[in-house]
Image 1: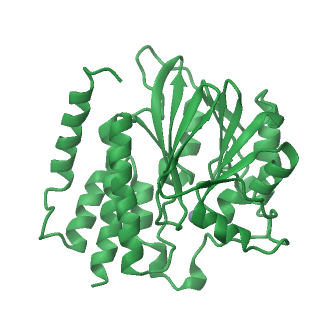
Image 2 (image 1 turned 180 degrees about the vertical axis):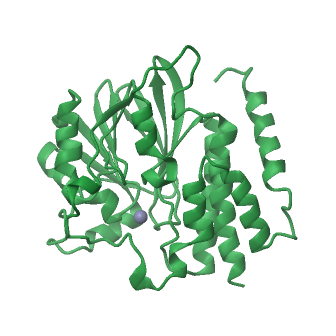
Length: 330
Ligand SMILES: [Zn+2]
């Protein structure tokens, strides 16, 4: 980024902080935080706001929660199958209508980000790459945002069939390696372990900045990486874990909150203007990837491009929602 743009980004951020955290300080209450989060969410992140501020999963009895590791039943394909799409010059959507998976192409091969439930790996990722003219044998790394079945059940197949290296947070490797060998999708062997300090992963001409963001799971990872839109370079931030379906304890919300605050700083430093998540309900991925197929008039932004202030609002919202839950437990 040029020196000229830095003051602009900082000014926007300060304005956003003042606007969103008008009641910051000793007077913060669960209600004031939810109000601030609602304002930060706007219409951009209403799906995430509703999920974690209005109806947190872990308010419900454990048996009613989703997101568990095993889901052997295959739902009707018509409810989840999505075609693959080229979305940026170097980023391809190979997810379902519900869960995102991406192929980030580099000069030395492909990085896959998240791997869906077991039933979707062949039709979406393997056949999707082939349909897009990409070779699954070129997959070098598979980044797992966190070890829940909707994102990691395809990892073992990509590792055993194509020799891809699996990248996961240290704590999520531990839970993964405790699974029985009969686990749905299989169990990947330990490859790249990301600790609390994160990791910069470089493949050819592309570097993915991997940030440890514990909260949704202890080993949740988030990412910053460049995407290109007609040759224009934009920085994308990928939030790796969202729902509050962890045990409902104050310290867990504090860990989650601190990770979101860290991502606010990371996104600002990167000058990120694209915010992505791993469930389509949280970033409207399925809408955006289809909108990205349509022609644009001169000067019209890519459907995923916003501005840094809007990206920061995502993490301000998620931090406030976590803090609201934490304070409500005292
Ligand atoms: Zn999850």
